[in-house]
Image 1 (tube, rainbow, N blue to C red):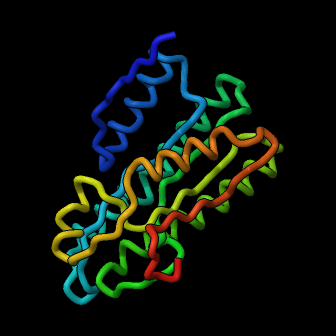
Image 2 (image 1 turned 120 degrees about the vertical axis):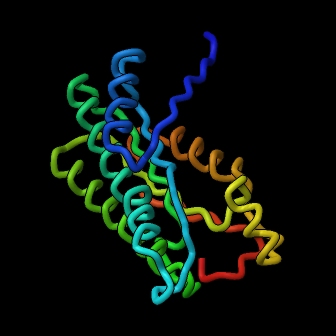
Length: 194
């Protein structure tokens, strides 16, 4: 078999874009068995200095798009009568502990996603669904988006993207009767609570 990657550009501010992406996946690929919610946006500011449009963007991308993607995935699974899927939500250690005062709204969105994930897990269990829900919460991770922050803050220790993807693969290949609810990843040495 040949591995093929399909790339779709999606504006996570646009419900229409998200719906179109799921429609394409259902039509062209017959649906997806695994969903990885990985979009995130951070605009750091103190609350007194923050801009409403930045807060709206963080809520739209970090919370609302996760809800929309998850809803559409579950609808697709139901249409296909597939009960053996896995939903991953890439969250953040900021969804477990608030260690900086300059990112209050961002931390709030990440706490919200953690609560939504817990409710979703309960909702699926109440329906006797075997669809799994795993939240992966990495600490600072070296990406294109974080490189300038690492340099600006003088930080040397950060996770690599491969650390996060390996955690996802490890969870995905775990026993079919085991649900790994949360994974927290931090670089070593870890200078935070998590």
